[in-house]
Length: 274
Image 1 (cartoon, rainbow, N blue to C red):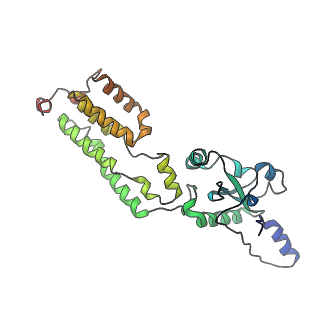
Image 2 (image 1 turned 90 degrees about the vertical axis):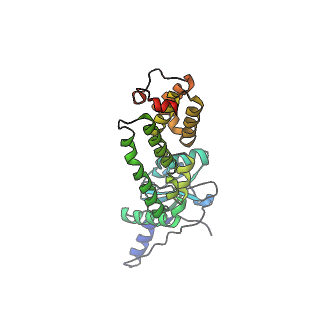
Image 3 (image 1 turned 90 degrees about the horizontal axis):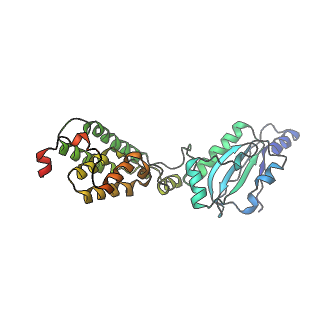
């Protein structure tokens, strides 16, 4: 069977001509879309339908949908899918994807309705960030929120004036709690897989690792400082460019402070001996 774009406008005209007061439009949603279902921007913009509302899917080389949308004109070919879409198209597809147009010539409300059907039909396959159907583990989401909330008091605790060793140990505890966070497990579909692959969200703050590295450097234990910093950057590669992390790396490389952090002063004799 040949794939055919559903022309809603034509169906409505036919219904009116036949005296029908109501019609039902069936927009076929397939598991995969072959070449015959896809159209180029040049073909579409040269067609009589280009300025009408239409619903589309972005599909990969296998014809599997990964993004849904609706609009007019060249909307389907605009690079407007968000950061997960951009990364997936660039890194996973090498920029190669196709556009399958499913229906054309409907009202805004009908276009929205078809769009919602696509989001529900393809749920875990799509990279539409705004979709409530994309696959969420809400129990895991609540657990991750609770774990993240439990870390919040530690930001205040490490800033309080107290013995350096206590600040160091508090920072260690907080960093271990951050390492235990796993926000990607809340997304159960392709969207979550892409976020994890692109390291889109890393719940690690440089605040705690700074105290840990500075503590080790203050004690002259450069290998421990280096190991701690490498452990952090391996979990959060993008944080390696953070100003504070760059500064810590310079301290570790040099093996000493240019200016000793005030929280380590005056050196606590008990801290130095332990």
